[in-house]
Length: 127
Image 1 (cartoon, rainbow, N blue to C red):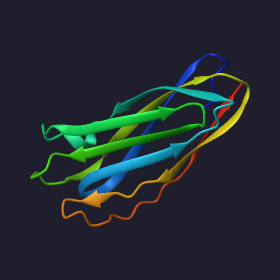
Image 2 (image 1 turned 135 degrees about the vertical axis):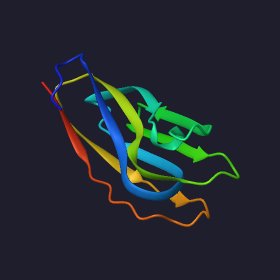
Image 3 (image 1 turned 180 degrees about the horizontal axis):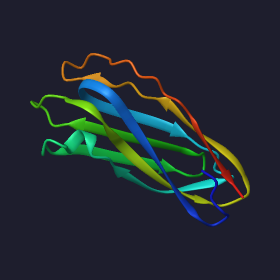
Image 4 (image 1 turned 90 degrees about the horizontal axis):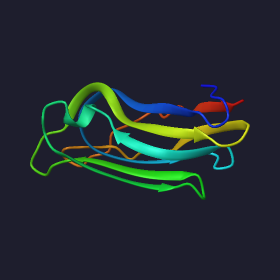
């Protein structure tokens, strides 16, 4: 994406072809000199079967990091398939380029076993 200075841009983090996804703690990094994270919203993947979801977020714009936790309720199964985990809404605060990197994503299934994940990065260029 290439937003103009002052504009907002949304970045959605998706999971593709997961099986029994139960827990998704994520930690992402961005350049706070170029972007300000205004909002993090929960995607539909964890709740598409109508179950309640535990969702917390901690935005640290001063260092350019955000920590997000998505968890299914205890006693429920994980979700399978593809869909949005979270959407990040950034504001372009200065010209430049910022990568959006997933630093940590220790996904787990309903047995609390690790799930493998490929975490590509994206770049936002502010004009």
